[in-house]
Amino acid sequence: MTGERKTAVRKDAEKITVAHVASGLVRGGSEMVIYRYISHIDPEKYCWIYISYTDPEESVKQMFETLGVTVFRVTSKRDNLLKSCREVWRVFRENRVEIVHSHMTLMCFVTNLIGWAAGARVRISHSHLDIPGAGVRTPVNWFFKRLSTWTA
Image 1: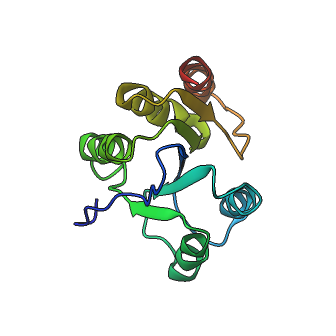
Image 2: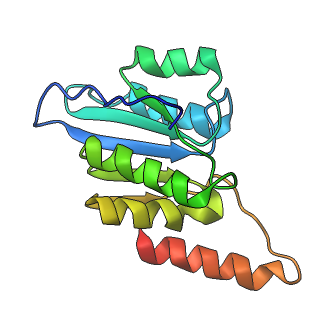
């Protein structure tokens, strides 16, 4: 993580901790879908975490934080896969994440496996994008989709 050690605000042991994991946090389609989810769900029952692999857009980060969401910025998988996975695992473990909602298109299985290893009881693969395969990519896309289905 970018030098910060923080945990989500979990005032009540009865709250369920949910982590949304996405490639970034900008004013875009999937981010606004997640924002609407959170803004319409009882904040007394849930503790929210948002994990971004890129630097969050500051105004959008503040919008989420206004709802009580703790935003974490972790190392990109492309920059350092092992470090990225360790950071995500640490966020899940330190915050006792019970539900992982992964918005990573074909790469949901990575987050799902980390969530499983960290003890998350529920793992959701949510693709906001349909990526049609072409040529050699078709078997890879099929395989990644199956991995995401099997790990959810």
